[in-house]
Every structure is written in structure tokens, then in C-alpha cells.
Image (cartoon, rainbow, N blue to C red; front, top):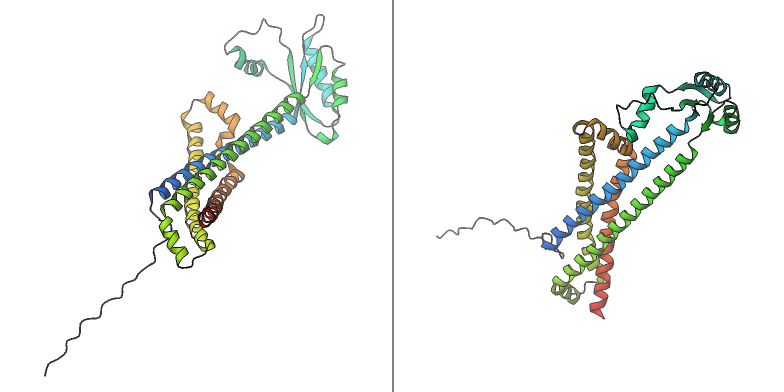
Length: 312
């Protein structure tokens, strides 16, 4: 009697469906690299605008808390006596906290960026500067303070209003310029996605024809491309966003530890030590989904238009 030997059961092979859009194609890798670079540039632009705007707000707030009294030397007048009189009159005005005269070292420090350090300024008839702190801005009458100070010979009041206006104009110009640069970068990203999508569609023309033959709709094909390009956009955007955060972190470390103190102080005055803060980080994190959404939407619209052209 012959026994029937049964073959051991074979494991079933898991067969996955191949994606319509190639995952590891050269065009996909190139587009992801391009999206990463564009996202990095966008995040750096937004971060720089946030830093400059925060620094400008800080400058304006500091300047707005003080006014300056300038007392010029005059013939027949004792400037020290005029300084004491000006301080006394200023502190008597409602809304003023206290007033103090700048020392010789502080005056030389203000002139150092233009005249340099180490110069003997004793023979120069420099005016005396009195810094007046504003305790209650709502209670202060600037006109009354100006008229009161004008009674002191050689004294005049500087409210820094013109400088603050120029600062606001400069800040607005920087913000608008940064937004225009960001718009151009996003526009370049959209154009790159359009060309990449059309190139992928052209290389996958046979697959698209087969899908049309078996009854696939244009909406289905467009959604497949949209999913793939959304993945590319989000992945490239996330990499670019992380790279931008690392850039600002590295810049902060360089400014605080590597650069000389003079250069570090100048950059710190302009960018605030490159401290983004929560608002700057949030602005960068918003760029990532924006880039991913633009990439997906652009690819979908491009695919729909391409399919309409080949169907007509």
C-alpha cells in the first residue's frame, strides 16, 4: 500500500500593489531635496523677520521710557548749576520718575563709534546730557516738560520721537521685504512642484492610460499623486524646518561664545542674541504644513489639468 506523501504547506506570498507614483524615483528625491532647501530658506527668512521685529519693539520701548535734556555750555553761565536746575525742574513735572546726568565715561562711550576710544575730550566743549526716566507715560505732559526745561539757559528737550518714527519705518520695511522674499520662495516651490509633477506624469503616461482603460477616474489618479506629493512636501518641510531651528541655535552659540565682544554686541543689538522665542518657533513650525499643503494642492491641480489635456 503506497502512502501518499503530502508536501508541506507553503506560506502564502503577500503581494502588495505597486504605487502609481514611483516612490524612489530620481524626480521624487530631487523634489524632496528642493522642498527641503526652500523650506529652510523660508524658515530662516521668517525667523530673521521675527528677530528684527522683536528687537525693534524692544528698542522702541526702551527709548519711549526715557527723554534726554541737552544743556549746552554758554558764556557767563555755570553749566553745573544749570544741570542741577534742569534736574530739579524735570523731576517736579508729573509723570517723571528721576533724572540723572551722564558721566564723562558714558558720554565718551556714546561718541566712541564715531570718534573712537582713547581720545582726550577734555578740551572740547561738550554739552551735558541728562537722562530723564518716565514713570507714568499717561500722566506726562511732554509740552509742559519742554516749556519747563526751556527756562534753563542752553537747555533743550529731546523726546526721540523722530528716531522712533524712523525705527518704525525701518522695521516695517524689513517686515514687508521679508514677506516678499517668503512669497517668492513659495512661488519658486510651486513652480518646481508643477514641473516635477508634469515630468512624473509624462514618465507614467502608460500607467495612466492603463488606469483609464480599466475605468479609473481622473479624481482617483489625481488623489494618488496628491498623496505622494503631500508626503514629499511634509517630509522635506520637516527636514528644512529642523535644519532652520538648528541654524538659529548654532548662530546663537557662535554669537555668544565665538565672536569678539564688540561684534557680538552689535549682532545682539540687531537680532537679540538670535533668541527666537515661542513666537519665532511657532512661525517656523507653521511653515512646514504650509509647504506640505502647497505641494499637495499644486500637484493635484497640475495632474487634473494634465489629464484633461490628454483626454481632450
